[in-house]
Length: 235
Length: 269
Image 1: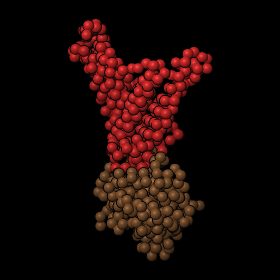
Image 2 (image 1 turned 90 degrees about the vertical axis):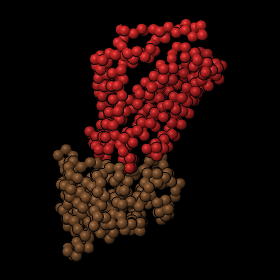
Image 3 (image 1 turned 60 degrees about the vertical axis):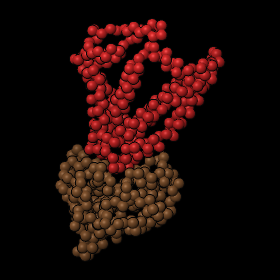
Image 4 (image 1 turned 180 degrees about the vertical axis):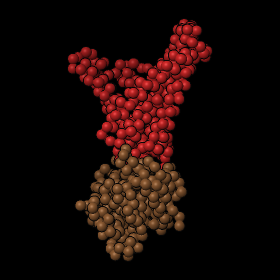
């Protein structure tokens, strides 16, 4: 099977502290993979390296057989854990920007997603609530027919209704041929959409595998396995 | 790159329009009081308006160059630096739009001043006549050189600021010491100026723009006599140190590619 992401012996150091420690990981094309771990486990660092916002200290990273750069940025649709749009924009400006820069941006799909999220095109970005902002960002990201979607904490800090809407949007707009990487520590809400999981602890992979297989092997839900793996961290 | 410039312009044009309107009001006030004669209140208002204009100029400059800094320190960097653009394309876009704004602001303010002179002082300046008069003192070659020189100086200054900001961001991850870029800027300015001085001293060969001869300053005439339409005028020649020119162009390119490289390969958001 094609590998959409290949990470070989990757380490990210901040002076002497290792945020990622000799991490190796391969992700098959067409999979939805959850990167799970508590705060500070290295999830966001890993994602930032994949999106070109950070550089690894050691090791190699390939996306679709290319080193992270202009090409990989054109095939990766990234949802950061913050409002990354320019404040002067209206929603339609944000859509136009994505259309201008990403040939895979589907305007029709964007309009459908906005309608689903109950957002109007003429709304100003700086007047949106956190939940609305999250829905808009997700609409932009999912409206692309990208090879790889990377979603950083897509449901953190939003109310339960918005959370369900966001999860529905992810499920309904996911392409079979695309891959999706989702970081979260809200495992219970997300585990049903994940096909594979990677547990990160202090920058290292402590457990990885197919969600169904893990559930069968451990006789537990992924959320319970998560609690077991990170029990010492929570105490 | 043009697409990125479009969003850069759309993001700053409201601020530029606001600055222009404010500057127009202040300039009109200055002309109004200055042409009415002396009054204590009027003089104070003129002084305050001039100070305010300097303030506006400084804030505008900082706002325009701050557009680059905001990408490095604010969340919009998560959008800009994940767009499929090279570091060089991002730097070039920011640079061109900044130059465009400075040029437009300068042009608009110059034209507005001419208008104010006409309205308040009843002075009608014919630009063509004014240029013809100017041409008696300065050759076309000198004028072109002056303009190119000003553009090179402006580009060098902006690139040095961008480079200092990027180097500061790459070196210190802590956003609270973001103002450190100014110290880097001062140190680099001093070093580059010293380098230019040494290069000029080591290779003291100049191009005389009037005669296109190359030589040391001692070997060249300082004044040239010009006779046009019966008028005799002296024009001072312009001399360009060739080594300093090459040094400045090389420095400019190094700053441009250096900033692009840092953005593409070293930035840690």
